[in-house]
Amino acid sequence: MAEYKKPLPAISSLNAPYWDGLKRREVTLQRCNACHKLWYPPGPFCPDCWSRSCTWEKLSGRGKVNSWVIFHQAYFSSVKDEIPYNVAEVELDEGPRLLTNLVGIESADIEIGMPVEVVFDDVTEDVTLAKFRPAGMRKT
Amino acid sequence: MPAWELKDKAAVSGVGHSPYGKRLNRSTIDLAGEAIRNALDDAGLARDDLDGLIVSFGTPIGADADTLAYALGLKLRMYNQTWAHGRFTATCIQNAAMAVSAGLANHVACLASISFSGFRKPMMGGAGDSEGAREGGGGHGEDPVYGMTSPGAGAALVAQKYFAKYGATSRQLAAVAIAERKHASLNPAAIMRNPITVEDHQNSRFVCEPLHLLDYCQINDGAACVIVSSSERARDLKRRPVYISGMQGLPAGRHEFIWTHPGFGTSQQEVFDYQAGVQPVYQMADVTHKDIDAFFTYDAFSILVWSALERWGFCKPGEAAAFTQNGRIELGGELPINTNGGLISEAHVMGWNHHVEIVRQLRGECGPRQVANAEVVQWANAYGDSLIYRRG
Image 1 (tube, rainbow over the protein chains, first blue to last red):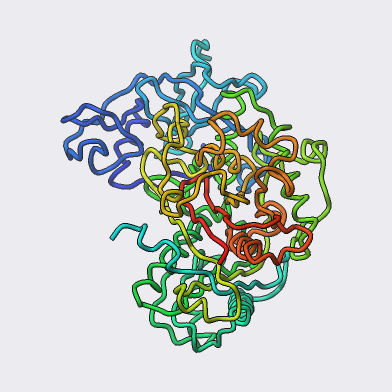
Image 2 (cartoon, each protein chain N blue to C red):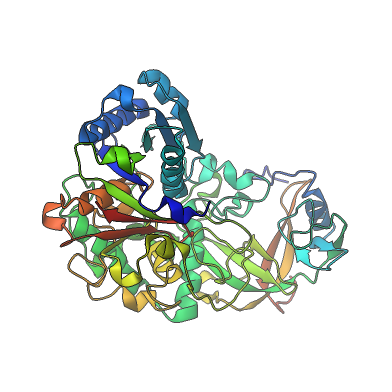
């Protein structure tokens, strides 16, 4: 695997299960065992009811584009060859919103509300990112 | 004690600033010293009268409060500092108003002194975006792992969604930058003074699309200072006091996303039909929207002006695009906004330059950009805090 130079996540005791899930090709988030709500970003207890009891639950990996932008400025030297590139905020079917990149689509075709599904990108041996593509695309 | 009891109990007794420029080649302590000295001179105070200091935005771009006290030989009874974000000017002034009302200090200098040019690495986004990688994510929605970096990117997410949701356009958003540039053209302290057109705005490069370069603030060096005193003391000083009549604190929580109002549905915000409702700042100051002679707001990105107008109920969600057309927010219009030229055209001094301008407007010192008979001016932000100032 070529050396990956883009920023990597800061993995902590709070978010490690999320990143472990992506390595297993699962989008998992915490669901409260008391009030049954999901939350994101990872936290020590349910922001709704303050229960400390939660389960990391596998989600559908499907959602829709809530908003998106195109970076024309290369803030990182490691993205110089990729600009312009997109960043999207995807609202998962289960509710929480993730920042991500859309793949398999030209920026001119991106629309708010369009259905998308997760694709897993193993960027290093230890880190897998959750990117999204238009729903229903044939696997290549 | 309800905040209402502090209505008009504290005042701005003096204002001052350094030159503003893209690359001043001066230290932030030096710039701060000049701003503080000018503000003290303005108030008719001596250095040793100053016994409080509140700084927003210190290291790595700005001067920290403790180093200022040391370098400038201040003898402080209290000081405080907020972290390196632009959102805290009203918070600092509110804390100063409380401090002088509680007797913790007589005169509190509130300021930021910043030098963006003093750093080789970009300090807003990219390698400088250490906050983007913190637990819980960046303060403006940064997530560098996916290339999501810089405060403007969060504003661009809001703009894109706003355009789609309400059928608004980038051409309409240009009205904000055009108005502010027009104001800056009347302000000798402003960095960008040449008037611009819609075409200039549309032809300026995208930074983070859909926002163009002309939707972005300046990146510069400079310091601006506001001195808060008890109104009783301020009345004995050189200038006519400008009273702090209304205060509303800075909210936070999962319902908030820095660049828009609750209900908009960015980050983890719930989606609902936001209505401004009753905002305590107006109750405290005992004024209504009709009494506001000019409106000042944190405009690091033009879209924030739309968010602020909607948040504070000058128009309903989705209506700011139309509201800001046809000169309504320009000098001579119904609601002049950021008459100094704002962060977009005067300078980015975290909004401290706006507070300096508000005070000068309420003293009638603004010459060609004076708002006729200005009596009540509001500072209020997309992110939910506010001050209402009243002419003394």
